[in-house]
Image (cartoon, rainbow, N blue to C red; front, side, top):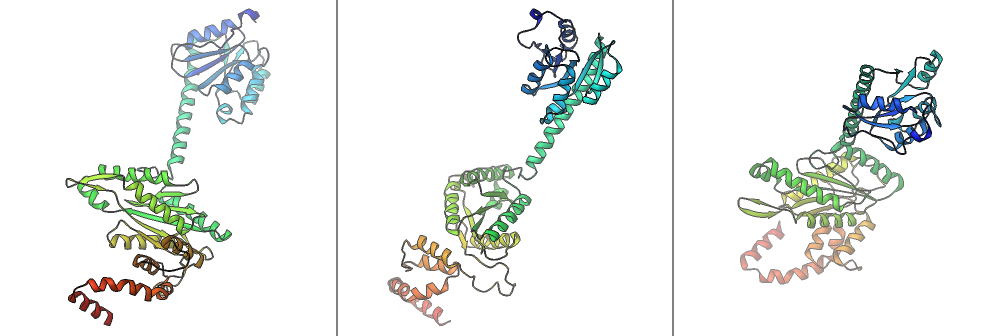
Length: 409
């Protein structure tokens, strides 16, 4: 035992940068001897008793091995062992804790320490070879354990991630879509999905090379991340394809998200054949009927069909689809999609800016046709034709004849 004035005010440590080892003993002689032997290869920190050691172990996650005496003031080695092995912190619970025993210690004390979770034993006074051997063996094993744990955490964290963009991958998205679909049907809440492809991406890939094309994909993914809510999920499921599920969103809200994405992505430019272009997107919107039992695969197929239609028409456009019963038999799917009245009214209000249901432009009429709202177009057909007449009057004779022929078909 040493006198109180020999107790260090603060924990002592060597200046080495190797694995950190904590030596706990109330004998200054033992602490100094252990430091001289270990510090050429290890960063040695010291504690005077078990209580001080416990505080250091909790505060310093870089401690890899502990050498501890059994008989100490305040908190002895047995109690230190018990606290460590009963800790909720797995790092502390599994920390290598080597007990330094005296030749005078009987076998029962060693058995008690072993039962409490001692990792190993070393006798005092120790020789340098034994101390170095135990320090090396346990520090190496603890380093390997930490590295394996770190890699496992990285693997688990990145298992569902697309390595190029950092967005989720297809398997995670399908699982999340299942959850969101189930919730939507169970609670009768709205659900919207989006899919977009980068226009002319294959051409970019061929002419600009893989690295440049991937750079564009990464830039687009960054823009997507800034536009999402916390509850939205985005994933890359193809070479230039990103899908989004937005639980609780109506088709009108999904359209606003799509328009925001178009504006954000258009800020990304690239040069091909000495010409600078803006990145353009073909976007599909799909909001299934929450009263129906729909499946993720049906939604993904519907989105794929819509985005292909957008690309076939030149790209850089949004193709909305109203709430469709995706479980109709194959021969019925050719029929006009059914329209949810409330959702249709929301889109009409957004498109026309009027609450009276009037269609004031050809674009509005075409949008209604796209969404399956044929009846509304028929109701407004006389007014639309009257607005179309001045255009016909401007046409030359050949165009008028061509129009007459098409009407007779």
